Structures are given as structure tokens and as C-alpha cells.
Image 1 (tube, helix red, strand yellow):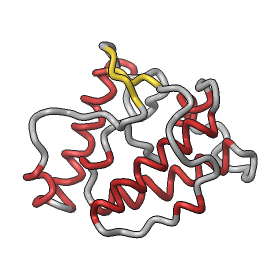
Image 2 (cartoon, rainbow, N blue to C red):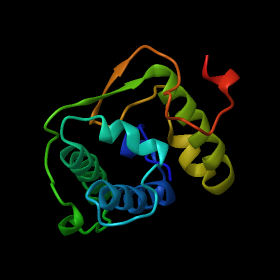
Image 3 (cartoon, rainbow, N blue to C red):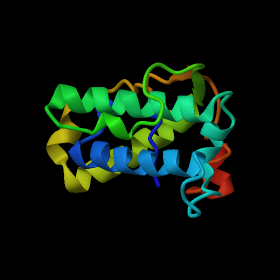
Image 4 (tube, rainbow, N blue to C red):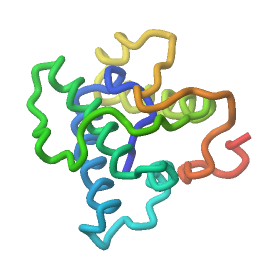
Length: 148
């Protein structure tokens, strides 16, 4: 599961669609509708929010907004609590840099044209305020030495 901290506009078609599906799964987990993935580390930031379902709903709304811009049709009726977030979440600069590097490696293989359109600046998903800091503690894809 990869729920990107990056702005939806930075994702390629495959990344945007996959993020939509995976975040719908995260919503189902947070709502108690599934027994799988309940301990997935990427859910920690939503669980820590004052209103987890509101936060994930705001996250999904921004993905659907980007889909609209591209002419895709994401079924907004699948969002339990659509709309703006009841409270914003934070993401660290280290986490954004790690995710940008991860996305860059993926795009180099599957969508080089999309890689070429990315600018040098990293943008966060609109749900997140960016703060200085290292890679998030919930990011399990890296050895501990890479977190510093």
C-alpha cells in the first residue's frame, strides 16, 4: 500500500489510480469494514488525526479533484466523508524527499514522459502542512540507517 504524501498532480496515471484504490482500502480499514491491513504502517498518520475518516475523506477528495482535471472518472460516492479536512495533517521534508525519489524511480521505468514533466520542486498533497524533519517513523520501506 502506498498512500502518497506528494501532491496528486505529481503522480502519473498509474500512480493516481493505484493511490485511489489503496486509499479506498485504507478508508475501509479505518471504518472497520475489513479485517486485512489493520496494522499497515501508512495508516498511522490517519489514525493519529482527530477525525481519521474525515482526514481520509479529504485525502480522497483531492485525488478525485485531480482525476477530474485529467478527465478521469473516480466515483466520489465511494468516499465516506467527502470534503475538506476537519484538521490538516503534517508531513516532513524528509518524507517528501523520500517519496519523490521513490516516484522518480518508478516513473523512469513505467512513464518516462511523466518523469520529464516533473519540476525540481516537491509539492505535498493539499491535506498536509510541510514541516522540517526526517523520514516518517511509519515508513517501513527503508532500513533504519536511511531514516536519518
